[in-house]
Image (cartoon, rainbow, N blue to C red; front, top):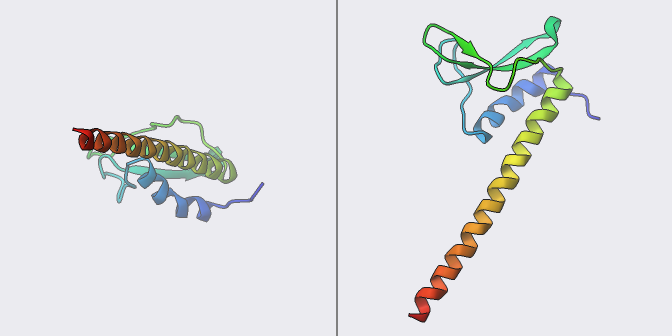
Length: 107
């Protein structure tokens, strides 16, 4: 298994946010943004969502903290799963378009 560090996870986090259709928070009170919280004494990383302008936060993916290695693998798995789903959906769309084009030609 590859060894990942805090810097690896922090570098990957913005692309993870983009892949799931969210955005990283620019500040502690950036409503709707996702924050990457790292506290090694408590176990590692957790993702927090800023809920209000006063800085209230929620943990949309659960409150369990994970070490950098595990967290990076989890993010990579989620992105790969979303990409696979997106590719499958796009392929289905193409098939439907070809069928409808053929049907129009017959008329």
